[in-house]
Every structure is written in structure tokens, then in C-alpha cells.
Figure 1: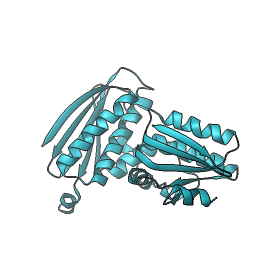
Figure 2: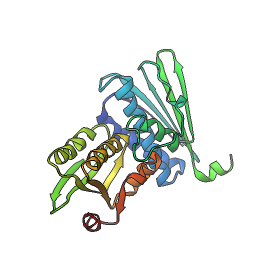
Figure 3: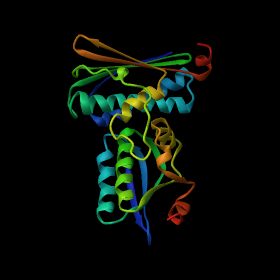
Length: 142
Length: 110
């Protein structure tokens, strides 16, 4: 089991630190390198969205990240104090026009495609996002 | 992130190393737009040493592709790393960029 809580300021320079923790946790959960990368990508997209859109740019306001790995499952919770925004509500799949792809909304689509579960709750003045990934063999049993 | 640019007869090859996310996507975009504004529209991006790319980096690629295509050029990828390929696939944008196993073949394709 692996559990770590990180509190970062909403600055892009901290993204890599969070991705490294997620990489360690993914290894502890027994995820493949490919799924581990997907989780690092998803957490990065979630944080980049919060900083850019939620907080309107880099700021010293906090973002809390809880990373929990149990055998076969990686769970990442992200909490911020930005205005309400529900990333879980966005459609996970949309038709892409390859010749004219959207330049916005890619981050949300990546989160939904890379993770198995995406859950959102507004908790008082905070946005709480929970993303979960299961190891492939575990997923076959659910 | 580190970007090295090398100019050939008909092509400019950019070698990008490191991680591309919102922390440095603007720098990446600036490097490419300097080239396109100078009329360099045949671009090879050697992404073999890119360990991470988020949608912020993809946006730069997609925007740059539109610009060079409208000027009759193209962006082609040389030996993109597994991470680059994975991000492109997850986003469904892998079909947009022709990929070559090495930079020589990517350069020769123009």
C-alpha cells in the first residue's frame, strides 16, 4: 500500500513533482508502465486545468492531491478552491474531426479516456475530483 | 525542455528533449511560430527524447500544423517516444501527424 498527500501552490513548476508521486504509486499498485503514464497524464491535465481555468492562471492558492495505491488500484483525489467546475460531467467521448481538431477541451477528454472512473463533488467551497485506475487483470474481474 | 533547431535545404528539424506541459508550452510555441513566420513551413520534429507531453503540448502541435498546412507545408514526427505516441493516441490525434522511424527518413520525406 502507498499513500501520500501533497499540497502544492497552483503553479506549473509543481506538476512534475506530482507526476513523480503518481508514478511511484502506480508502480506500487501494479499498473503497467502504459497505464502509469496515462495516470500521470490525467493528473497533469486535471492540475493544468485547475491552474489555467479554475484559478485563472498561476497563483499561490493551494491544490491538495491525495494519492492512494492498493493492490491493483490507483486512486488520485484532487481538491481546489476555485469556482465550481465539474470535470466528470464532460462527455468522455466525442467525435473528432481529424482535419480540424479542437484545441480546447483536450485535457478533459484525456482524463476520461486515461482513467477508469472520474467522480466529482462540490464540497463546501472546494472542488473534489476523484480519478481511479485499475490494473488490467483486476479490471477483467469486475 | 530543450529545443535544438537545425536547418536543411527544404526542411527545418527541431529536436525537443524533456517534458512539455503548461510550464513550457508557450516556449515551444514561440520556437515554432518564429519558424513559420519566417516562411519555414516544412518541419520535422524529433520527439525521441520527450518523456512527457500533456494537452498543452498537443495544442501547440495542432495549432502549428494548421499554420504550416495553410502555407503548403507539413509537420512530420521523427521517432516520437512511447509517451508522445501514447498522448497522441489517447487524444485521438495520432492520425494527424505522419510518423517516421528516424529523422533522416522524416527529412527525406519532404
